Length: 265
Image (cartoon, rainbow, N blue to C red; front, side, top):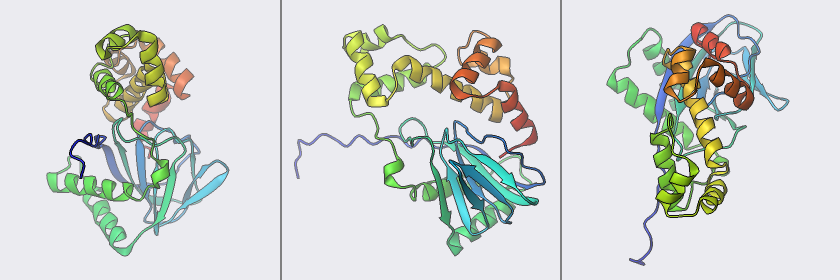
């Protein structure tokens, strides 16, 4: 064994469960389900589906469906149905490209586990520790089945990994490219080129999209108003946030808040 080999850089699995619900749904309009977070779906009763790229994926009792962040798809149904769903994020270290829909048959053990979770979360507002731990384990168990080619490679350069850590800690008021480059010991232009090659986006665009996604999550899951979410994540005002959300994520703040008010999956 080579003792001089560099240590393995392991991306952090920053799992954050945003929502877990079990609902009886009478009406599921064909709204765009694209979101900044992951979704895990299981329907104990048939009758619903999601569509993406011209393909229909039935949500039946014998399958579970994982939908990756920023995946554009539409929901529909032909009868009332039971729906169990989890929303969660994984942090920047573990990312997939948009378009991931992983539909997988359930084992008997997994179905029994999901059915037990459905009963456990049906009438709860607070989540006890044993249930929270089981939900975390369930998510990680299902993520292990995501095809390896779906995962995006992490940043390899330690200077870019460090810059990402700094940016995540200061999203509402992030340092500019010159400060980031100086902190990394690089020329500004070289830093921007390296960041773009490693991450896939220039630093300023990465920051903007990250702020939009965090603000959208707060609108949907934290009960913030549009004004509060805009202020929290460094937007000048409600209008500035709304314009950026429309342009870069094709969403309206009002649409996100309506989804929260009706508890949409």
